Amino acid sequence: YQPQYDTESLKITSVEALSRWSTKEYGEISPLEFIPIIEELHLHDKFGIAVIERAFVEYPGLQEKHGFDTTISVNVSPACLLSISFAEKVVRLLKKHEFPPSKLTLEITEELVIEGVESVNKKLMPLRQMGVKVSLDDFGTGFSSLSYLPRLEVDEIKLDKSLIDQIVISEKSRVLIQSLIHLAREYHLIVVAEGVESKTQCDLLCSMGCNLIQGYFIGEAFPLPEMEVKIENKK
Image (cartoon, rainbow, N blue to C red; front, side, top):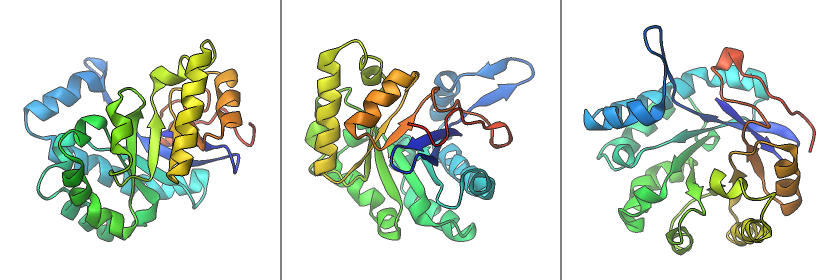
């Protein structure tokens, strides 16, 4: 889990669940290696649901660490979300674990939206009606992202790390990020900046009105018992 820092409450209010594979024989195996294999074996549906259920099971521990308002974000692959029974399975898990739907955010990518905005909205509708939130990941990496916003039913956008990397050294990047934050505010969307690695980046994003900050400056991703946060109650 990697923490997300709320610039208004000055607290860690949410975490992103990240998949990691640690083995004794081969050490740490990158998601860039094992996720394609999972998809090639057509196990993406089972894997995606397993990750969500693991987050539900560990939620009480996250509450104890960060408070009862903690939200969990989980990435959903296009193949997993577009499966026929995805929403039905998530609903079943929500009820089984008595997990509050409003504390779950599903992160989708532009790759998924290419399949069709209407199709994605329809797939997510049963979950959104229960209170589950939806985030558009890797936002700002392509021009098409902007055209989706008026039609895509999401609650949050995540500014891609490639944008954040340029915020200190490029005035044009700062103007672009400020414009995206302003645009999101007009659409009543939460803005998350991921890949924040320095105090300077964090301070700039806070001054621009970014809602949530995520990255090594706040805290790295760790299994629940080992999770540490580097910044608390500090802009």
